[in-house]
Image (cartoon, rainbow, N blue to C red; front, side, top):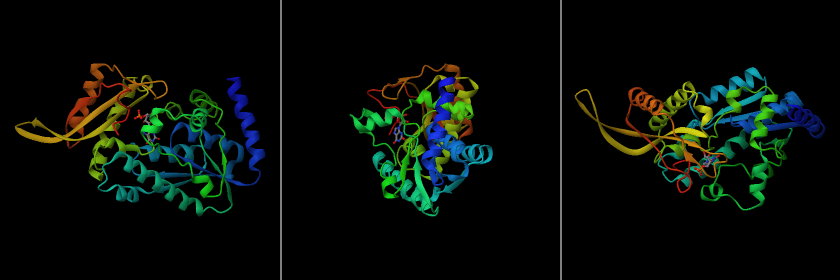
Length: 318
Ligand code: XMP
């Protein structure tokens, strides 16, 4: 549209003016906001932009590969990918408390990011995908989700690293960011991506995060998304995902009694995540997801559907 086109053009000009010949660092998460920031900056300053993507080992299946393909191969953006899986899993060993998980993951992210950034000399700016609602939230009362669960953010990072912040999306709402992304030619898959929490699959594995439990949840979650897309339901829900429960249940396979893990399926409708209602997905679709998970994911013999709304429940289980 005309407004988005002029937003993009004036932003590019303003970014060029501000950055001059300096270098800008940008943390890519794979989400919509940081993706739009990266591509916008790349249009403005090209190779003066350096992106860093931290793979914490808690991502959805295929996520790290998608980021490399889209940003490095397609957009030809300078991208460093740090595989910190072992460090994250190491520090999460034996940890079961949700807030403890968030703290560990948030702190380690900063550590890894800082270490990587220190290798890049002559950087003056840090670019972030802050949106207008984030700006409002940080100066007024925090919403329930912000106070009940400490959200993973990199608040103190720029000061500690002595970098100046660049926030080209600070005046935009989410739907406007999506329009800017389209204007910039980002793939629809990234533009329409569901929100994904910073602590990733760690807060969807109730109890301890182990490589084996990560494998189970990763496979189950991929099936949920595949079937949602195949049924054209992905864009109709706000978020949909699998949760691995810390219980075992009895089942039967052939003549054998099984005693295995339980996956909960969560799908919600929402406009801003402050409130949410469970999605009335077709029984057929739920049935297909359940059958596939139980047949294809070793270690799972039961799938349940979460029919609670927010409030009083939350979207995530942790
Ligand atoms: P809840 O579970 O509080 O979630 O209803 C509301 C929205 O926030 C996301 N969420 C998080 N995002 N770090 C994030 O970046 C977190 O620690 C976190 N916890 C929840 C959740 O996916 C939903 O979109």
